[in-house]
Image 1: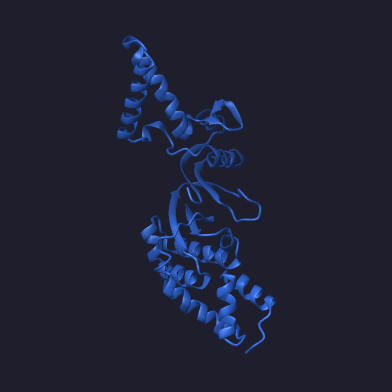
Image 2: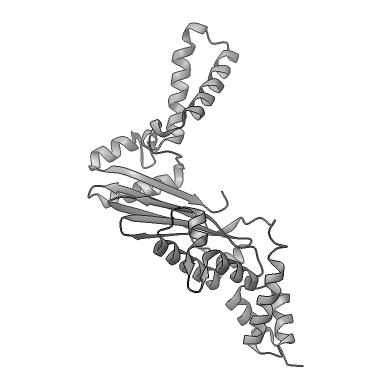
Length: 275
């Protein structure tokens, strides 16, 4: 029986992102041969992928890239922060992103079907999950077209990779203001660019809710239309980017900020890991 040290286990575990016990057992079975132990872990992990299908993936990272007038944003998810900060997981995100860009994938299905070397992105992720020993999934993909881009990746924990990502497509020359708007989006989490983009059924539902709240507060019927519209305005300030108060100066709306900077926001995407 080979003499397996704690240092051997640690090195292989850090290389693959696998669990302590599984890593040690594989090294013992392989007689200390790292390559053979890796294969053992891969085979063991492949059998476990189906068992992990229902597990939650609340950790991971966001990644962004630009190419030929399009900015791409992905969320690659895993189960634990140990894996999220592992070099192998981060390298996997880089490979997935390159495949997404090369395939010009704008949807999750297109990204999973994209070629990543000799395999599809979906197969590559499954293979890596088998080695890592955790559920790993490409959860979301976005593609935003525009003239120029501001990209902001925020670390909610200095020891982990970015977990909030924003890409903003814009027209104009003020890159600093565009980046500050990307930072604003990371914090304020707008769902739409303008209030006109909010679906009619969403607006109707909100209108019905605020009207019922106003009636229950005893507001007079004659005043209800004005009150309801005022409360709808507050709703739009929550969900529509251009209506929001600027995080750096709440006396200004984002619409006023972009006008002063000579910018036109063409679109944006925001992902937060696990959200």
